[in-house]
Image 1 (cartoon, rainbow, N blue to C red):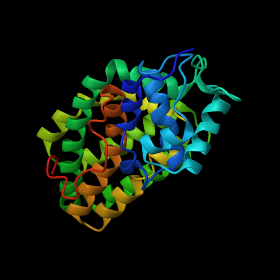
Image 2: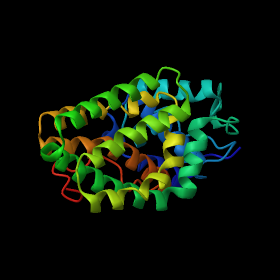
Image 3: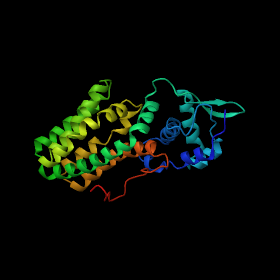
Image 4: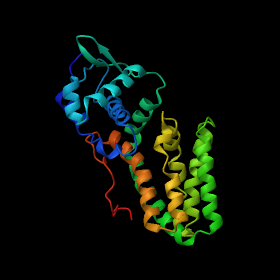
Length: 264
């Protein structure tokens, strides 16, 4: 079993965690960043993690949050704490959704980032247009689809989760009443299918998809700026996760700019 290299330590260090903190518990974010570093090959089975003080310093997080993250990873069988020797990487658990998601992201990430960038641009535009073009019936339908997807989280199964998520986002695009925009968006839907399935299969996925209501509220208020921002901030979480595993240097991390000028 070999010690972790400086290069690998830097890879972990470069995952800026600040962008995810506003929406998700810090220990969960730390655990997923370490899992991503293992799944993308920077860490292998048998490698030793840095000491707790060093790892906390590299990640710029408190040791209490780090300990909780490490306990979670140990419970999942991702790492093993050997008393008096340190913390070591284990063989990845069989059929672990998080590990499978990260490994898939490593293989597909670069292509998927382009699809997500196109999707953010189109959906943000659609949400803004929906604020001024959607009928009251269409706004009520968005609210209904939001509730249906929320209900599907309670054991409805992965297929239903994927379908209700697709229906909600497609309804936003249709509410824009722009034929050209709809034509550009439709080819992205099948491209996003595998991503949706893998993301919605993750543990605690409901915390990753709780922004639908904010999008609906902005459209109901007929506030285009708020609607566009709500869409970008919802999708940016998934975008930065894909970039984190596709580009281990940390590119794509962090919150979107306040003006999200690149997409709006």
